Length: 129
Image (cartoon, rainbow, N blue to C red; front, top):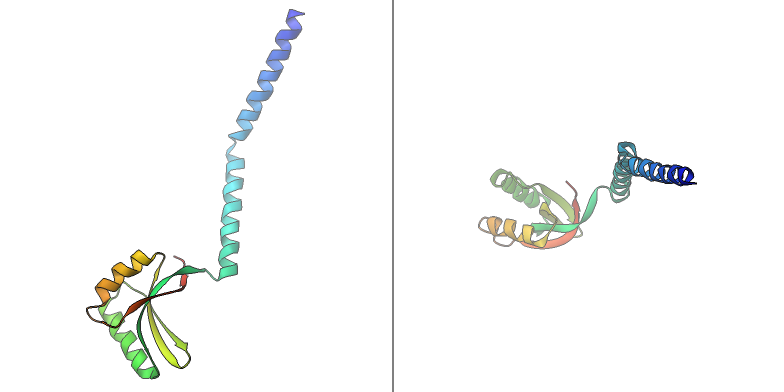
């Protein structure tokens, strides 16, 4: 009887130990990581790689050439920020940056306002980096 009890305990412990090993199996962790990567890729496909965020509007007006001139001047002065030119009827708009938080946009705005005093922060869709 004592021998059976010992065998039963060994069997139960080995089963539990085997489950512990399989839970630490790198393949299962790798599988979960792969699933997360796939979900993120699917999210980017659905959203075109964009999310809610902030940009700085440095120009808007009805003259397309003026918008291009402002964009070129800005790009020459502030190489660290990406610029976008958009048409929002009836205005041509020049937007700057892809800021995830308003604080990031505000810090950039303070740098930009010396050369572009009429610039301001706008909320919108930004490119995810």
